[in-house]
Image (cartoon, rainbow over all chains, first blue to last red; front, side, top):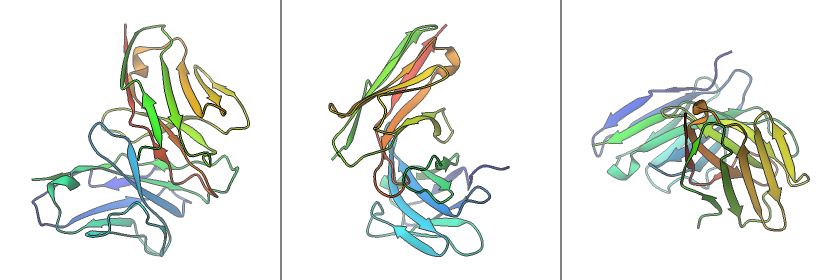
Length: 117
Length: 113
Protein backbone atom coordinates (compact mmCIF):
# COMPACT_ATOMS: atom_id res chain seq x y z
CA UNK A 1 0.00 0.00 0.00
CA UNK A 2 2.05 2.90 -1.31
CA UNK A 3 1.89 6.17 0.56
CA UNK A 4 1.47 9.61 -0.93
CA UNK A 5 3.87 9.84 -3.87
CA UNK A 6 5.37 13.14 -4.89
CA UNK A 7 7.70 13.78 -7.79
CA UNK A 8 10.13 15.00 -8.50
CA UNK A 9 11.85 14.93 -5.10
CA UNK A 10 14.14 17.76 -6.15
CA UNK A 11 13.54 20.35 -8.84
CA UNK A 12 15.84 23.14 -9.96
CA UNK A 13 14.46 25.92 -12.11
CA UNK A 14 15.88 29.18 -13.41
CA UNK A 15 14.05 32.39 -12.68
CA UNK A 16 11.17 32.82 -15.12
CA UNK A 17 10.71 29.12 -15.85
CA UNK A 18 7.69 27.03 -14.90
CA UNK A 19 7.68 24.41 -12.15
CA UNK A 20 5.27 21.47 -12.13
CA UNK A 21 4.96 19.40 -8.98
CA UNK A 22 3.02 16.16 -9.00
CA UNK A 23 1.22 14.34 -6.22
CA UNK A 24 -0.43 10.93 -6.36
CA UNK A 25 -2.63 10.40 -3.29
CA UNK A 26 -2.84 7.20 -1.33
CA UNK A 27 -5.10 4.55 -2.77
CA UNK A 28 -8.70 5.27 -1.85
CA UNK A 29 -8.03 8.92 -0.99
CA UNK A 30 -9.94 11.51 -2.97
CA UNK A 31 -8.83 14.64 -1.11
CA UNK A 32 -5.50 16.38 -1.69
CA UNK A 33 -3.91 19.30 0.14
CA UNK A 34 -0.79 21.23 -0.75
CA UNK A 35 1.45 22.90 1.82
CA UNK A 36 4.60 24.97 1.46
CA UNK A 37 7.48 24.88 3.92
CA UNK A 38 10.08 27.64 3.91
CA UNK A 39 13.45 26.96 5.58
CA UNK A 40 13.21 26.90 9.38
CA UNK A 41 9.44 27.43 9.18
CA UNK A 42 6.33 25.37 9.71
CA UNK A 43 4.12 24.27 6.86
CA UNK A 44 1.68 26.76 5.40
CA UNK A 45 -1.59 25.59 3.85
CA UNK A 46 -1.98 26.46 0.18
CA UNK A 47 -4.92 24.64 -1.40
CA UNK A 48 -7.40 21.82 -0.86
CA UNK A 49 -8.74 19.86 -3.82
CA UNK A 50 -11.07 17.02 -4.50
CA UNK A 51 -11.30 15.29 -7.85
CA UNK A 52 -11.94 17.99 -10.48
CA UNK A 53 -12.77 20.59 -7.82
CA UNK A 54 -10.86 23.24 -5.90
CA UNK A 55 -12.47 23.33 -2.46
CA UNK A 56 -10.33 25.94 -0.72
CA UNK A 57 -7.49 27.95 -2.25
CA UNK A 58 -7.28 30.59 0.44
CA UNK A 59 -3.57 29.95 0.99
CA UNK A 60 -2.54 30.20 -2.64
CA UNK A 61 -0.69 33.30 -3.85
CA UNK A 62 -2.96 35.27 -6.15
CA UNK A 63 -0.62 35.16 -9.12
CA UNK A 64 1.54 32.54 -10.84
CA UNK A 65 0.30 29.60 -8.73
CA UNK A 66 -2.39 27.16 -9.77
CA UNK A 67 -3.44 23.65 -8.79
CA UNK A 68 -5.57 20.94 -10.28
CA UNK A 69 -6.67 17.42 -9.45
CA UNK A 70 -8.08 15.87 -12.62
CA UNK A 71 -10.41 12.92 -12.80
CA UNK A 72 -7.50 10.75 -13.93
CA UNK A 73 -3.92 11.20 -12.89
CA UNK A 74 -2.06 13.02 -10.16
CA UNK A 75 -2.70 16.40 -8.65
CA UNK A 76 -0.47 19.12 -10.12
CA UNK A 77 0.80 22.26 -8.45
CA UNK A 78 2.00 24.65 -11.12
CA UNK A 79 4.16 27.69 -10.53
CA UNK A 80 4.66 29.97 -13.50
CA UNK A 81 7.57 32.39 -13.92
CA UNK A 82 9.29 31.20 -10.76
CA UNK A 83 11.22 33.65 -8.58
CA UNK A 84 13.87 33.00 -5.92
CA UNK A 85 11.28 33.42 -3.19
CA UNK A 86 9.44 30.35 -4.48
CA UNK A 87 12.33 28.15 -3.31
CA UNK A 88 10.84 25.91 -0.65
CA UNK A 89 9.71 22.38 0.09
CA UNK A 90 6.22 21.68 -1.21
CA UNK A 91 4.31 18.93 0.53
CA UNK A 92 1.21 17.17 -0.59
CA UNK A 93 -1.12 15.35 1.78
CA UNK A 94 -4.09 13.14 1.04
CA UNK A 95 -7.01 11.86 3.03
CA UNK A 96 -10.30 10.11 2.69
CA UNK A 97 -13.28 12.32 3.39
CA UNK A 98 -12.53 14.05 6.72
CA UNK A 99 -15.70 14.65 8.70
CA UNK A 100 -16.01 16.56 11.95
CA UNK A 101 -15.18 14.33 14.85
CA UNK A 102 -13.73 11.59 12.70
CA UNK A 103 -10.45 9.93 13.49
CA UNK A 104 -9.15 9.92 9.96
CA UNK A 105 -6.08 11.94 9.17
CA UNK A 106 -4.19 13.36 6.26
CA UNK A 107 -0.97 11.58 5.25
CA UNK A 108 1.93 13.59 3.88
CA UNK A 109 4.24 12.78 1.01
CA UNK A 110 8.01 13.27 1.17
CA UNK A 111 7.84 16.60 -0.57
CA UNK A 112 9.37 18.29 -3.58
CA UNK A 113 12.25 20.59 -2.87
CA UNK A 114 12.19 23.43 -5.36
CA UNK A 115 15.28 25.53 -5.85
CA UNK A 116 15.10 28.59 -8.06
CA UNK A 117 18.48 29.79 -9.32
CA UNK B 1 -0.24 36.70 11.90
CA UNK B 2 1.04 33.55 13.51
CA UNK B 3 -1.90 31.71 15.01
CA UNK B 4 0.06 28.89 16.64
CA UNK B 5 3.18 29.80 18.62
CA UNK B 6 5.62 27.01 19.39
CA UNK B 7 8.56 26.95 21.77
CA UNK B 8 11.38 26.29 22.19
CA UNK B 9 12.90 26.55 18.74
CA UNK B 10 15.46 23.89 19.61
CA UNK B 11 15.99 21.49 22.47
CA UNK B 12 18.81 19.20 23.53
CA UNK B 13 18.23 16.48 26.09
CA UNK B 14 20.14 13.43 27.23
CA UNK B 15 18.88 9.95 26.54
CA UNK B 16 16.16 9.08 29.04
CA UNK B 17 15.21 12.71 29.61
CA UNK B 18 11.72 14.14 29.10
CA UNK B 19 11.68 16.91 26.51
CA UNK B 20 8.63 19.18 26.66
CA UNK B 21 7.48 21.25 23.71
CA UNK B 22 4.84 23.92 24.17
CA UNK B 23 2.31 25.49 21.85
CA UNK B 24 -0.18 28.31 22.30
CA UNK B 25 -3.01 29.22 19.98
CA UNK B 26 -5.25 32.22 19.51
CA UNK B 27 -8.20 31.00 17.48
CA UNK B 28 -10.86 29.64 19.85
CA UNK B 29 -12.51 27.86 16.92
CA UNK B 30 -9.63 25.37 16.75
CA UNK B 31 -10.85 21.94 17.81
CA UNK B 32 -8.19 19.51 16.64
CA UNK B 33 -4.57 19.62 17.80
CA UNK B 34 -2.10 17.17 16.20
CA UNK B 35 1.63 16.83 16.64
CA UNK B 36 3.82 15.88 13.69
CA UNK B 37 7.33 14.44 13.63
CA UNK B 38 9.58 15.23 10.69
CA UNK B 39 12.97 13.70 9.91
CA UNK B 40 15.35 15.48 7.50
CA UNK B 41 14.32 15.01 3.91
CA UNK B 42 11.00 13.43 4.85
CA UNK B 43 7.42 14.57 5.09
CA UNK B 44 5.70 15.18 8.43
CA UNK B 45 4.18 12.11 10.06
CA UNK B 46 1.31 12.29 12.54
CA UNK B 47 2.49 11.37 16.02
CA UNK B 48 -0.49 11.97 18.27
CA UNK B 49 -3.52 14.26 18.28
CA UNK B 50 -6.04 15.56 20.79
CA UNK B 51 -9.46 17.24 20.80
CA UNK B 52 -10.49 19.79 23.47
CA UNK B 53 -12.85 17.45 25.29
CA UNK B 54 -9.93 15.78 27.07
CA UNK B 55 -7.03 17.30 29.00
CA UNK B 56 -4.47 14.58 28.35
CA UNK B 57 -3.81 11.83 25.84
CA UNK B 58 -1.07 9.24 25.98
CA UNK B 59 0.22 6.99 23.21
CA UNK B 60 3.29 4.97 24.07
CA UNK B 61 6.03 7.34 25.19
CA UNK B 62 4.24 10.42 23.83
CA UNK B 63 1.75 12.47 25.89
CA UNK B 64 -0.23 15.57 24.96
CA UNK B 65 -1.39 17.85 27.76
CA UNK B 66 -4.15 20.30 26.82
CA UNK B 67 -5.27 23.40 28.72
CA UNK B 68 -8.35 24.83 27.05
CA UNK B 69 -8.71 27.90 29.28
CA UNK B 70 -5.10 28.90 28.69
CA UNK B 71 -5.27 27.93 25.01
CA UNK B 72 -2.10 25.92 25.36
CA UNK B 73 -1.03 22.37 24.66
CA UNK B 74 2.24 20.55 25.03
CA UNK B 75 4.03 17.38 23.98
CA UNK B 76 6.02 15.29 26.44
CA UNK B 77 8.33 12.51 25.31
CA UNK B 78 9.06 10.01 28.05
CA UNK B 79 12.36 8.09 28.17
CA UNK B 80 13.61 9.92 25.07
CA UNK B 81 15.92 8.05 22.71
CA UNK B 82 18.45 9.22 20.09
CA UNK B 83 16.00 7.95 17.44
CA UNK B 84 13.53 10.61 18.63
CA UNK B 85 15.87 13.31 17.29
CA UNK B 86 13.73 15.12 14.73
CA UNK B 87 11.77 18.31 14.24
CA UNK B 88 8.38 18.37 15.95
CA UNK B 89 5.51 20.53 14.79
CA UNK B 90 2.32 21.30 16.63
CA UNK B 91 -0.71 22.18 14.54
CA UNK B 92 -4.35 23.13 14.91
CA UNK B 93 -7.45 23.17 12.80
CA UNK B 94 -11.15 23.93 12.98
CA UNK B 95 -14.28 23.55 10.93
CA UNK B 96 -15.94 20.65 9.27
CA UNK B 97 -12.73 18.87 8.42
CA UNK B 98 -9.20 18.65 9.76
CA UNK B 99 -7.54 19.32 6.45
CA UNK B 100 -6.48 22.96 6.79
CA UNK B 101 -3.83 22.75 9.45
CA UNK B 102 -2.13 25.79 10.95
CA UNK B 103 1.37 24.75 11.98
CA UNK B 104 3.78 26.08 14.58
CA UNK B 105 7.30 26.87 13.43
CA UNK B 106 8.76 23.65 14.77
CA UNK B 107 11.13 22.48 17.49
CA UNK B 108 14.35 20.75 16.56
CA UNK B 109 14.96 18.07 19.18
CA UNK B 110 18.34 16.43 19.67
CA UNK B 111 18.60 13.49 22.07
CA UNK B 112 22.21 12.79 22.90
CA UNK B 113 23.35 9.35 24.09
